Image (spheres, rainbow, N blue to C red):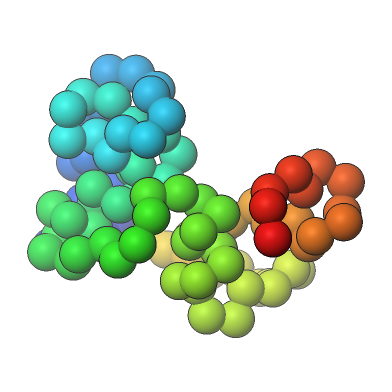
Length: 89
């Protein structure tokens, strides 16, 4: 199944936002929409269900101002010390 189809299928199951949920129970957070869409497509998600974990450890070549194309995933990311960064090292 195509990834975008899985995202749309998962989005139809979601009734509200709850932190730490992936859509399988009707609730999702931002990365949960992606995590469960991958599961619907047969892909397992390693590690923690969180955008910060994802951006730090699972995304190759995370960079700003990249030329985007249809189907690309976009993550917000802040460097340590940058305004708005409040995560532990």
